[in-house]
Structure formats: C-alpha cells, structure tokens
Length: 125
View 1 (cartoon, one colour):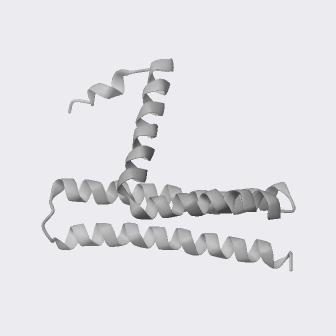
View 2 (view 1 turned 30 degrees about the vertical axis):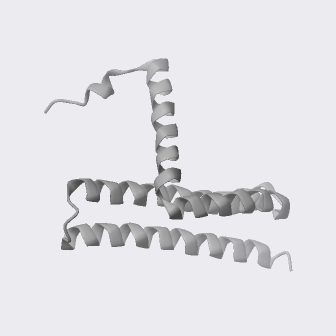
C-alpha cells in the first residue's frame, strides 16, 4: 500500500504545511457550516465570560475547554458529513448512521458544556 505523497514532509516544512491545512479547514468550516459559525459566535462571547467569571485557573480552564470541545466535536462532525457526502449523496442506512452519530457527539459536547457551566457557576450564587 502506497502512502500519501503528503506524508513525506518532516521538520519545519511539515509544521508549516500542517498549519496551512488547519487554517484552510477552519476557513472551510466557517464558510460552509452554519452550526460551526453559530458556535464560534457563542465561543467569542463565552470564552471572555469564562475568563471573567472563573474564580480560579481550574474554573477558567474548565469553562473555556467545555466551549472549545464543542468546536472540536463540530469540526469532526463536519468532516464526517463531508466525507460521507463525497462518497455518495444517495440515502443509505450507514451514511445516515454516520451522520446521526456525529450529530449525537455534538449534542453530548453541548450538554457537557452546559453541565460544566452550571456546576461551576452554581458555586458563585
């Protein structure tokens, strides 16, 4: 089995290429994924709020990471959806299952963020 021709880069060139691919992925997600855009807007509000409301470094880290985890899971879900759509646009039980599982992962990440915020902020009131 032949490896990808992009796997041969090492050192600084690999890091530069990886940063470029990551930036392209963020741009693509922001351009094509409504949910990602909405979650980015929420993150732009919630992360500064987390830094202000957290009483300790641990609280601030938990609040921020719970928000960033939603973005991470949304990016992975979007990658699954794009891959499934690239393979075929026909309705197929396995394609639906893959997309539904990705959606469920986003929902769990959102529930996790809500729970973390509720538990951390419960100590404040």
